Length: 358
Image (cartoon, rainbow, N blue to C red; front, side):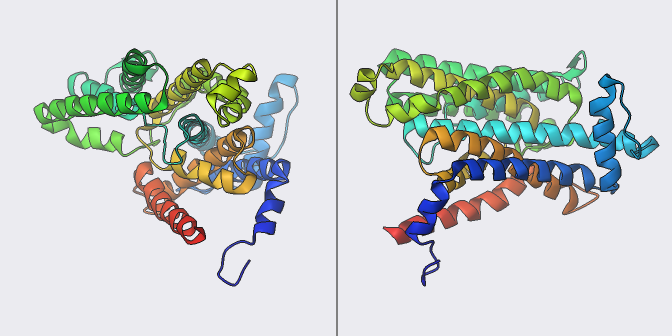
């Protein structure tokens, strides 16, 4: 550290020369966060017994048995309540962080976030319509609210992409303006529905502030295929994003089709965002702050930033959800409030540090 409290350039460069170490550290952070998430709660669970139970379930298909696990109520709390919530938090955090990193890369804008193209507004409108018009409805084991939020998010992003493509192809400025227009329209429609159904405002705002309190394995099964496919596409496109950073003409000369790559990345990031908000509501700052941290650790190359952001986002949201559960126990804080309390000051600090280096 220098006398002014900032990291010396040589130290930062040394960190960036070892992305494998950073990636391994992010993976270890995910494991530690998941274990903390299943250990800590209103009913504390013995760490050794928790690990034994998880190992026993993992090797059970092989006909093996691991003694010393949880039994009775403790096992039910772990497997039916706490574990699905922790797994879902990790999936949502990973999806939002890697989507944010991809948006920032494709739009070349460090302030881009996963909700840029109308995903949040579309999901909010879909959830609000169902809460107001069909409360408590379900399709099999899955509630209608996450399905409606998922459909609304896809509708919002689809409308933005269609408008942007019709107006000016895949140019980033045109897509951004289209996203703003569509998001404003959908937000106005949501406000209209809320004014007509004031009795449901509490539930609507509870969903909008983000929550995982009702997480179940059915939610994990619902979003896992979409999140898995979208995140895989984004990771595979990371090097193409690095090529786009040198300019479209140079990218074409290297065999990369800029418009096709942009649309593919935007579509995959939007799909991941839509699936995430469908089961968690709107959770801010994960997709904005985590990619910035990843870039500070491994440099600006998207091929390094995206995998680190994915793992760091998973760890961050699991720990944020843990804080939401225990800070005001037995009551719970909205998850979006926790991420805002952590993310907003942290991001302000990043901006201040960046301004000091200029």
